[in-house]
Image (cartoon, rainbow, N blue to C red; front, side, top):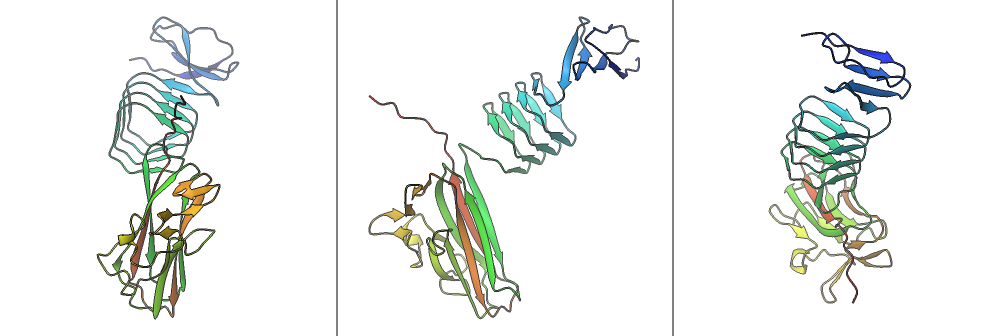
Length: 277
């Protein structure tokens, strides 16, 4: 088999397809990497800063970093570690088994199977997002703060609080959950040492029976109030971005075993306008 080389060439002239000729070359005039197809025509393979379209069956097995805009139309299998930073459109069936990090805007319309660890840091629409804050007791700190950002257009689905180990080392330890407008809006002064949140117990905003008597001003059983009533945040809908903030305040810290978890779930739904009649 003849050895192929990549060389630099000015202009767009085609290269021959003889086995001894170069079949991949860099067109310095157009700033494009080209490949000669079987018909002897030079076809752009990749250009600097522009998007490229992958239309055939693909298998990606090594570590990859994708920085340009991409369009994927064929069936794909991804098994390597990948980082995606640019906007992408995926329309083919895909199987993902490697760890991936996605930070660009993406549109997925094909059937996909994901079995690897993936982290999405961009806006995720049409899916339920769950984020967990773990509060770990220390022998020196008197305050532990965890924040989950809720994007604009999202609906807060739940805030769940539970402990796996009580905070027995501290003299006092109490968790309040709220936001930038009200520090105790959702829950106020939950004793994570005992009484309010024993092992196996769960506090949740879903119903008054799950509030444990520790609800804040955002939860009113008699009126059905759940959340704020403003022009930008109405109930659990966030017209503008907001947050859920949990703070455990400790009096005289002295232990290291306490563990409390706050899981926040929300969804930014795909919006469909109603049809007026």
